[in-house]
Image (cartoon, rainbow, N blue to C red):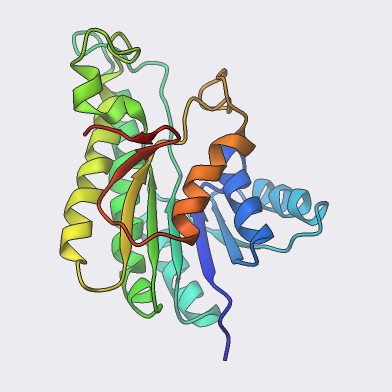
Length: 239
């Protein structure tokens, strides 16, 4: 009987997604890297192979329903189930900004990828997650998605006004809250995780390395029975 856990990391070809894939593979998990670009996916596999780790690539565009459906069917064919889903794929658009001046097109793009894309992938993978004995869903959120922190003048996040990005992460948190309740009693655990201020291609700067930022999402992917929470490295984050 195959007891190796099967994981999908969306947007797993670079940045924190790649580091999540690396740490999951190091823990003995069979990891599938979901990526739009086959060349970047191949480069990610080579990076993991250089560390003696094996992973699989999966063509997946979270903005394309046909791509999502095909990916779910491929996982079904390869493995028959999915133990871990990490909704990591996300974008930031420089045309985003305060509500009074943010580009509507930019806001729409960010919402489509960061929230609608995660919702669509989760729905498509639900049957595979239910087929696993104790599945985990980890939504890569951000402290910028906390309404409490956004509304607190003393918070470091108070002045970071990106209506599209912040709203997309707040919506992702709502997905966590509602999905954890919908799946209560199913054995599927769902949590939002803010990895911290990680330096990636998306942010351009930050205090943490992708390796450091991946640790908390990986911890929630591998263990823990608590569901419906919002966590940072320092502990719980207010909604």
